Image (cartoon, rainbow, N blue to C red; front, side, top):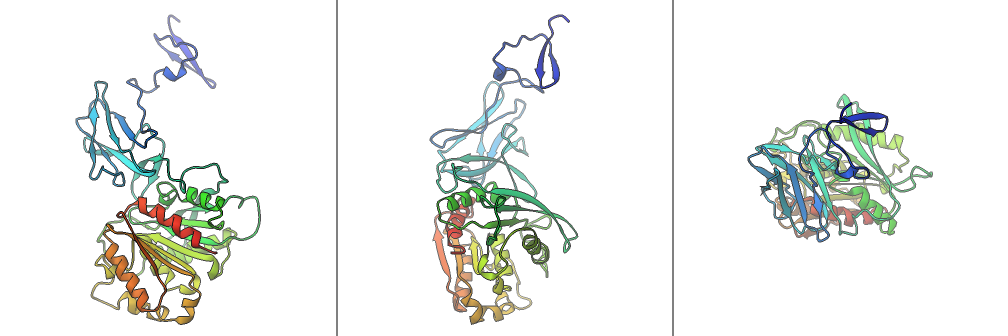
Length: 388
């Protein structure tokens, strides 16, 4: 057989022609499916500096995209070495999760050397985590489980997906838990809160520290189709129909959750904050805890909504807004927005509307803009206040 050599992988025998592979150096063997230099990406240094790399020897231009990465903005130009490896470093970055993609000669691609990804509504991102934030780091504590749940939506007449977090010990024991519905923003998906949002790790750490009660967290898909800003307004929001008729009934049938108001919470960011208001206020008798992150009633801030025709949101919901008995069962109405957030005006106007109707509103403005950097912080502050 001449100088042919073989590598045994499992039960497969793979010939390697014209090559001697030293025993004990498997890490240096060439990658099957192509040659070229070995590429490590992303590489996170101890000080939080992150180096991104991609092998693209024939590319003319490669850029790094990542809107939440400090200093990147509209993108960062990468440089190519003699082996065709493009590279750029960012940071040191604050601890947290960051989405990114490469733009290779005008084509957006994920990092081929990084298996960690995060979904949005019609896109997928590579994901890198920089440790250093106690409340969301992966720590040696009991961990809950995050399930991808497929259900059939009768209201939409198709199968849909949601993510559900169950706390440590849920599968082993009995008893019922409070339920927290956590909604994502525009262009994101039901995957977003558990990947870039770190929701499961945040809840694990809070519960382990005794700062939050064990709870079931339901993260549904807020989009029911392609999304574009400024699209036509729908008389009936199909997601709200799906939530009311399919998602909540599914959870209450298939999970051990309490079904009374005192054990039910809802919060959302951006579009999800709008969904939260448009579900929880018309059904205020069902929710004791309401959280709105970087959002509000969009028609109040010039970001879409009812426009000039038809009754305003306030007029449509006046009966619930002015019901003193319903306010007594509302334990928390909590808003938070970044000072540089493009929706800060919407948040302020919405808070003032609720105050006008006699609601006891908690409102805080933080540093930062419309980013996951803030929304993870808001979740870590909101969750400990639930079901106490």
